[in-house]
Each structure stands twice: as structure tokens, then as C-alpha cells.
Amino acid sequence: MLTERVYNFSAGPAVLPEEVLREAAEEMLNYQGSGMSVMEMSHRSKVFDGIIKEAEKDLRELMGIPDDYKVLFLQGGASQQFAMIPMNLMKNRVADYIITGQWAKKAWKEAARFGRANVVASSEDKTFSYIPDCSDLPISEEADYVYICENNTIYGTKYKKLPNTKGKLLVADVSSCFLSEPVDVEKYGIIYGGVQKNIGPAGMVITIIREDLITEDVLPQTPTMLTYKTHADADSLYNTPNCYCIYMCGKVFKWLKKMGGLSAMKEHNEKKAKILYDYLDQSRMFRGTVVPEDRSLMNVPFVIGNDELEKKFIQESSDAGFANLKGHRTVGGMRASIYNAMPIEGVEALVNFMKEFEHKNA
Image (cartoon, rainbow, N blue to C red; front, side):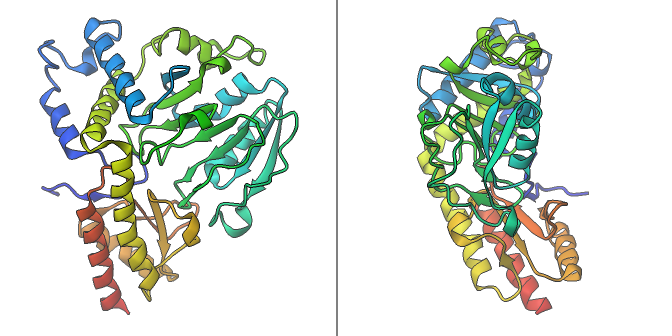
């Protein structure tokens, strides 16, 4: 049984800042003199009202969210947004999708249940190892929106430049790069992400949506709970929200502000990623799977190219305290997710372990 915390490279649920976990532990039985845990607290209480409002305020400050955008704390995870987006936005029953990985593909398939979902670009021809050229896409004239998954958790790619949507609304899933760098929210109609990768515990999605997109004009038979207006009108309290997750995310927002905000986090994440990518580029055993110009700062997939050696590496790295380095079941190999809360020491320790493994098994 381990007595120390491991370096957790899981893609999600993922590593959280240790000081946030310690704060939450101290408040577990009695949150700020309330005499109860946030886990036990009514979502209609004055105390929780303060928690959710403070969390939204800090998120708005971190991202520079304009006043005409609504912040929604929703359940169902990012995957529920795959249906919620077309149900609320597909007025013409047409949308364009750029397929750069499994999650964009799932979103596209879901949208096809509600209208015509066009694939205007894809990188599936090379196992999603690059981001396609999105400077002059065949955007449909009647498209209600253009959809992307901005950072691909499984394949380790990241849009460095947003696609030219030719005036059409941009919708982006940013689950695995959420709050990892500054973002211009006004470039999006909707920007959303599951929080369990880079912000908080599993069980919630944060959707940031321009207010003019929140209407009663949704597809027929859209359930009440899948209408953005339902949640916007109730300030995310239409039903019992994921109270504890909101509380934890709020603590992470404060931690990010303390760390210097999103510009500081981007610099920190670039420094961490460079350590790992530089090693992969010179290693004779390990190699990255993504073209250099499209590499993610958050998710770094790599391979050896030998099944037995990869199994050995995954087992020995786990024994040495490097958890969850096995690649996604659909692609194999290895993957290190190095989100905001992963300390630089964790990446340095991993690279040292990889160097030693390479030396012993060359």
C-alpha cells in the first residue's frame, strides 16, 4: 500500500492541486463555520449561494468572460453537450464539424441525429496525428455553427489557430485544455468543457454561451433539462447541481489566480511540455506520435513500437510511482497528461525514469 502521493498522469479524472485538496480536507466536516460539509449543504442555502457566485466571479476574471456571455454549471459531462448543442442551435438543421479525434467524431455522430452534420475537414487519414488546414474550409452556407474539439486528449493534438468559419458561429469543446492558457471568449458562440481533466472532480461541464444563443427556439421535443434557457434563467440552479464539484472548481479558480492567472499557466505548461518533448525528440527508444507543430501542452502520447517493452514500461513506471501512463484503449502506447496541477518535478522525474529505462533496455 502506497504511503505517498504518486505522480498521476491520468487523462481524467486527473491530478488536482495538492493545496486545494488539503483545503478541502480541512473543510470537509465544517465549511467555514456552517457546521456541515458542502456535501451535505442545500443548494438553496445562503452559504452555497455564496460558493457558486464566487466561483463564477473568479472564472469570469480568469477568462475575461464578457458580460453578454452566460456561465452555466451543468451535469451530464461534455458528452451530453454533443446532443444539447444541436438541440439548441440547429435552427436550419445543418452544422459543420471538423473531426480531429474520437470526441469530435462522437459529437458529429450525435448531431447527425438531429440534422445534416457535414464533415468539412478530418485528420483521421493519419490516425488524428495532426490538425488539418482550416484556413479555407468548404463551410456550408446554411450551417448553424462550426464545431471543433480544440485539444484532443487521446491523440495529443491542439489547434494553435482557430479555424476560419467564414462568419459562422464557432462551438468548441475545450475539456482537456480548459484554463491552461489565455482565451478570447468572444471568438466563440459556445466554449465548453468537462471539468475532470484540468479543473475539478468528475461530474460536471462548464458551458460558456453567448446570451443571444439562449432562446426558446429549440428543436421540437427537446427535454426541459436539455434547453440552455432552462439553466440560464435559473442561474444553474434549476435542479440540484453538482454542489461539491462547483465548490472544488471554485477552489481551483482561486489557486489559478494565486499562480498568476492564465498567462502564467501557459508559460508554466510550455516549460513542462518542452522537457518531455525535447527528450522524446532525441530518444532512440521512445517517440512522440504527433507532428511537432500541432502538439498539445496537456496530453503527450508516445510509443516504443514494441508491445512487450511497452507493457514492461507501463508496469515498471507504475511500480515506481508514475500512475496512469497507459495510452487510451483505442490507440495503445503510452500517454502522459500533464495538466495545470502536474508539478514540473513530476515531468522531470518521469523523463529521468524514461532515460533509465531506455539505458537498461536498449
